Image (cartoon, rainbow, N blue to C red; front, side):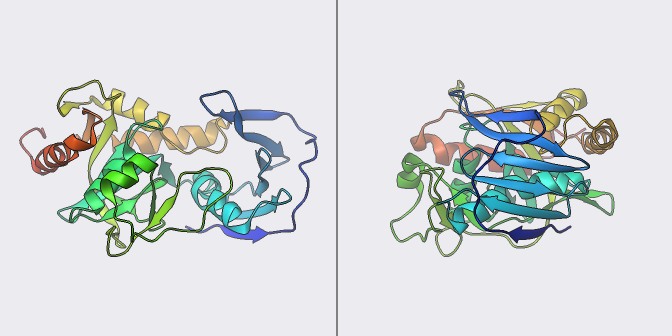
Length: 288
């Protein structure tokens, strides 16, 4: 599993010859990423930031940043947005999710932006448990088990989460130009797990309406829909790739490890939430 990356000279984002077939848009309506085809390959345009050419097999990526965009910003885009999409072309399962290590196994948190994936990962990582990824959860099948592969050893947090969880000495990565959300590096303050771990639980995060942590086991069909919703997929229109992706997800949901989790979104409740997750992840009585 690898993606070759080539960074070229900056160039202005000229109009593209092919219409986009997909688009990622921020909640306020601002365009984020536009997906175009280039014969058998793909062109991903991050508006006013960079163009990424992705080979059809997902093994090579070439980038042209927009003028004035830093290399740190481009490499962060590649690692956290483009590479997971390229890996999907290689048949690798990648999800929008964070994950932590509990008792030498992986526990993953999936949910829409703002549901608390990174905050939960940081809460565990600053309280004696190591994290495996802040986003871009890579899952592989090995010897009949699903394993989580660690990603970049950093966590992105908004200021309120930073103030609640981290000390001032926590090292940060260089800032990037498209977000004010800082990235905190693993180390003495934030523990990181470098080894793959067997997937023990997947929690799909609710909207925070619950007054206490509430767990609901999902049926396989419901879990499959959630996994599809949170998958990185470069080409959402290619039927053969979608069919293969669906087959792999169908194999994943044969295990009863998927739950809906809602919990109060108050930093003062994080210790209680963390303890509830620990007890639930360790409990085997709810597994058929």
